[in-house]
Image 1 (cartoon, rainbow over the protein chains, first blue to last red):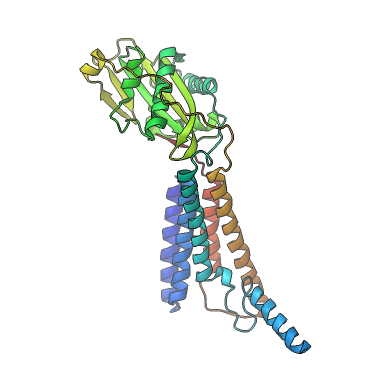
Image 2: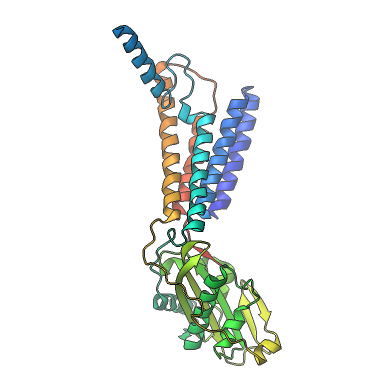
Length: 51
Length: 304
């Protein structure tokens, strides 16, 4: 249940980030990397705690 | 000379500050919350996990979880849950206790976490080998829980384990709580066996993970002979490090550090009256809070 909520939260975060920066015309590679690495960090931290 | 030294000291101290607060001239994000910083955190956490794997492999038993799960408390809690649903209590059965113990010892000996052993041993092999002639039986497994309450709560949350625990057919119960080394880490295994010798089914069957498996006739006629304690390994009571707690502390520390630095970044830029084209800190903070909450609530225990 907790994992499901986190995965849904992560997807919303990514989709929102892409749409927002695209509309804002501010989607640069460093900004995209920041969002992707934040998601990667969150998923790695969670998987490290579970397994 | 003094001026040069002062200038060099000032440059160095400013470079040090750039790791934590936005650059004073360019207003560039602090290094520790840039994408490079995030990559460093990921690398550090992966290194921590890899070092746990290396330690587990080279020094089995150094890492692990020390638990206080108690066999009698588990039986009482199981009966409390059954009685809440208006079902009869199950009685502790010596043969089922022995079967549960045999199963746990076998899991350590063959190094597996499953209802069926890699060597082909089935859940009913352990029960039949103790001479318990069941018509219907069931098995629940748990590992690495800190307390008995957590084990029963986890079984009650899972629909298939709950169905097993609350099955009205069962009259007897056997539980084993055994410590050993599984995958290089000190592990506490809980094996819960249920059974009845009353005539409730046409053919003997075993309920495992929500499935009812018919026991082959040849297994009933010629039950396997399994010897208790044949491969028992002595485990130290205290492990040096609980990898779960270490990962949890490391994860929460990284999240706390990033959240503090993001807040500091917002505060410093507001104070300077600067608008910077960047990713949104609030969005990062929401996701990190969600992750922190999840890490805080998750436990190392697993059921099967």
